[in-house]
Image 1 (cartoon, rainbow, N blue to C red):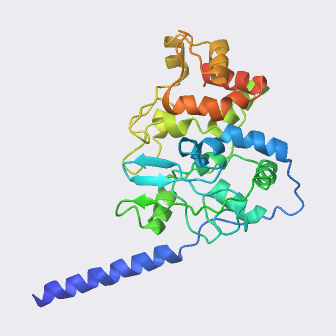
Image 2 (image 1 turned 30 degrees about the horizontal axis):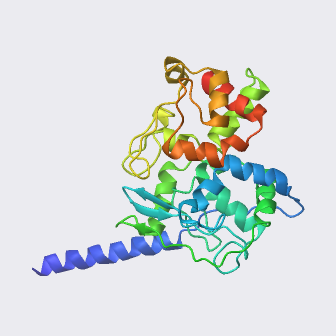
Image 3 (image 1 turned 90 degrees about the vertical axis):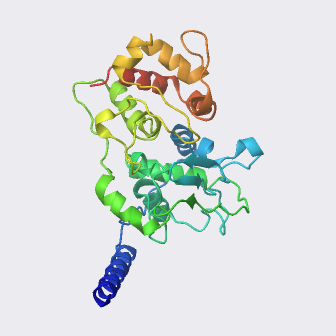
Length: 295
C-alpha cells in the first residue's frame, strides 16, 4: 500500500512538472515590421481570398461583419470564431501590426498562447510581410462591435490549451511557398493561393486522430468536416475523372455553377458566396491552372 502511495505521488509530481513545463514553454517569434505601410484595398481582397468574412461573420443569425460567433462542430468539441473588429475590449483594436502578424502566421496570441488549428494559420504562414501589413490595414477599417468572443467548448484533454505546444512540435509546418521554375507564373500564383490563403487543404485533406492533416493524402478529400460534412478529392486525376476543365473550374469558383448545371452546396457554396466570387479572373484562372496540372 505504501509503495502504491509513493508511486501515485511520484506520478502526480511528474504530471505537475510536465504541465508547468508546457505552460512555461515559449512559442512564436515577434518580427519587427516597422516601416511597412499596408494597402487596405489589397488587404480586403486578401481577406476575401482567405475566408475571413465567411468564418468570422455569423450571417445566419444576423451577426455584424467579422464580429465572430460562428460555430464549428468537430470531434474535439465546438470551436467559435472570435471577434475581429476594432473593438479594443472584445476584438483586435488593442493589437499592433506585430501581434497581428504573429497571430496570423504563427498561431500565437498576443499573450503568447497557442491558437487551436481550427484557425488555419499553418496556411497563412505563407503570407509575406507586405501581405500581413495589407491585411492589417484592411482590418483597421472594420467598425468596432462590442460583442464578446464565445469561449471554445473543447473536450478533455484537448481543452488544455498548452498541450497544443506538443501538437505544434509534432505537426506544424510553417514553410513558405516554393516556386516551381518549370511552371508558369499563373500556375505558381495558383499554387500560392491554394496552399496559402485559400487553405483548400484544410477541408480537402483527411486528418489523423489528433487533427493533423495527412500530407501523403493531400487534397484527396475528407470525411468528418465541421458539422459532419464531407469534401471530394480535388487532385488533378480526380478532377479530370469528374469532367472538370480549367475553364469550367474557374467558372464554378466565380458562379458556383458546376459543369452539369448543378450548384455547389454546403460549405463550398459559402466559399463561393463569401470568397471566390470576389476574386479577379486572373486569380481564378491561376487556381484552376494549378489544380488541373498539379505535380
